[in-house]
Image (cartoon, rainbow, N blue to C red; front, side, top):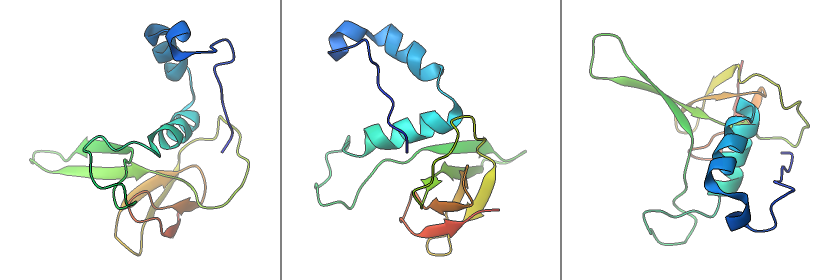
Length: 122
């Protein structure tokens, strides 16, 4: 995962909310997924015990036609340390053999965002 920074902001208050939103909207989909997981790693919005058993995930929800059901696909990051171009499309799809979570990634080797198991995508 490449590190990205907001080089002209020494403090968040100097950067400003609107500029932060504009910056984030300008990221590629891959960069946004990487940023989300980097920022969310230490978040605990429901104030659950800090024992590593809860975490935030990023997902895409698609309503199924003429039903009250939804398809949920998690956005994953690679399970291996490979450098990828920031323009890489999120086009690889897989299903975790450990927990059954559906996911998309830009790499064929993803880490399941739900349980952490390595998952092969095609």
